[in-house]
Structure formats: structure tokens, C-alpha cells
Image (tube, rainbow, N blue to C red):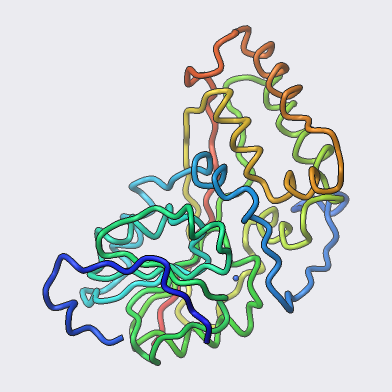
Length: 291
């Protein structure tokens, strides 16, 4: 294992010193989703945008996690941690949190907390002892994994009655301006579309119904993640899309300045910074226990 510790921190709690140590519409996207064989860093080049503009999760989501887990909370690991939006939030509930992430660029821009560290690692092979983990989370990343291998690795890592909680947010909807919503849908389905979205995106568009952890004790929840965004927030969010990165890499002209002007007209404003845009993200959660 070539795990690289990027951030190593001391715990607030002294007993830590003794701790040992992966398009819903069929005419938009192909139904065939390949199993990844090697890591393709789709977010390293947009890691700063990812950190700054991707939605953070609300209290409801963490309350669900808190209620689902039992009282033993020595170690949580966040796999596919990205820039750590979820990783640092888990630090409130667990003595130690480790974020595992295969993208060097993402880790370099990761959120920090005293009892959190990050390690460079693929999801399918984690350098921790068997049965040592109380909670595994995967936020907006499971669709990139080799899922059969990841499920087996999760079973190895979790202690008895440990939890695996996977979630993803779907395509957001702009709820207070029909013209802006039309611009948003055109950008997603036509400008980026199946040519630039990776096939794995279909897992999200299908509401994660094909993400099926091989744990007998598994339940599902869908919650809402409302946000208030500015026009600059929207443009920044678009710039964090892996499909947008692929679009630009292919040599296309940047369309975001044009989209920005169109959104300004839709909201009849010249203000790019005020929180004018009401949006809602659906969040699909999968909660599993190791019996």
C-alpha cells in the first residue's frame, strides 16, 4: 500500500494516543456502466472549484448518520473524501476521522480539523486493520468505485455492527426562475450531455438504485438539500463538474461566461454576488450495517 499521510494531527482526546491503527433518461445516457480498472483523476484539475462551490450537507443528513450509528465511535473513515466537506463534519461525532482520497489535487485543498487526517488511497484497498472501523462513509463518490471489490473491502474493515453509509446528491433544480432552470437543464443535458459526462454519472441520474451494498441490513432514505446561491456560485459550481472539465479538455470554448450573462438576464439583475437563486438538491442515502 502506498498510502501517503498528507495531514497528521493530534487528537483532542487522550485515549486516541492508544488507538491502533466507489442519466436517468435512457436517451441521454448509455445504460452500460463500465467497471473501472484504474484511477482516472477527474477532479484534480478543478479541486479548488470543488472545494469552494460544491454544496455542503445539512444538519438533517448528519443527524441521520448520528442516529444510525451505535455508541462506539473511535474511528470513522470517509472514502473518496474529495476536499473533505463531509470528512470534517464527521469529526464532531467520532474521536478520529481519516479521509481516503486518490486525487492528490483534492487532498491538497482538503478541509482541516484537529482530529482529521487524509491519506492518498484508492477506495478498493485501504491500509487499516480488519475490524478496526466503526463507520465508513462515501459522499458523492461510490459511482466511481469498483463496487464489488469495495463492498468486500468494507466488510473487512468494519467491526461487527459497524456502519457503511453512502450518499449522493442528484441534479439540482432551480425552483424560483423557470428561465434559469431551462438554462441549467440545457447546460447539463445538451452542452455537456452524454459526450462529456462519464458513463458512471448514470448511477446518480438513476438515484443510486443500482448502488447495492452486499449487506443484508440495508435501508434507503431520500432527503432534500435546499440552497440559496448567487450567480457567481452557480458558475463556480458548474466549473467543478467533471463533465465540464472533460468539455474544456476536449478543446471547446468556455461557455460559462455566456451562461453567466444569461442568468443575469433571467434574474433581471447585474448583481452576481447576492444569493438570488433558490435551488434544491435531492440526496439519496444508503445505510447498511455489518451484522
